[in-house]
Image (cartoon, rainbow, N blue to C red; front, side, top):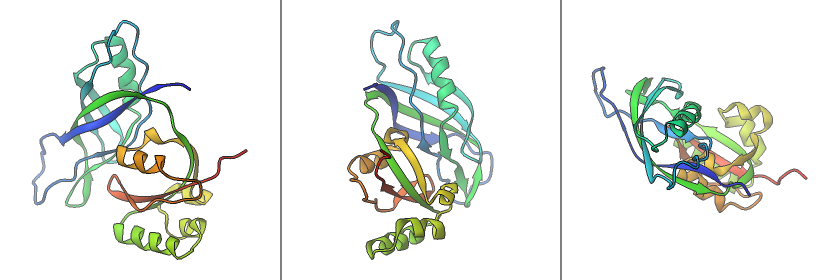
Length: 206
């Protein structure tokens, strides 16, 4: 089985705001990552962590990136930067409005075997609605029916099915929950960026 390199986020904070603050801003949250490139043989030891400054736009995409603590390899840093530019974040919010900002991220690096599960999802904007859907599932309502009725993700057009996914693509609290999930089981509502998500583990296609 192929072993790939992932980031585990440890410390995150936003840069200076240039707009008046009337309440504490919500910081961006990493919601989806792809694996980092394998370290070249010129690096004798896996770095314990990297530090980055990311400029994240209102839609959660990464617009700019610079390393404040690198791996020690210019080649790997360049390849890693291309990968990280494809990561998705929930945007920073102030007074419930998204805004672009510099975001400082410190992350630990580690190798892990991929864990690929077949999943379906229900994505909700509010915790109250996600809790209501979870209660309906516990009372026997069909997952697929609730997807079409309530999910705000485009996967609702496919009954919430997102197919086979490596759970390491998700934030750590989600991947730990999914790793314990049996086939046909569903999760409690999980915080996902600034939204809430319920997963169901599906049977893999034969």
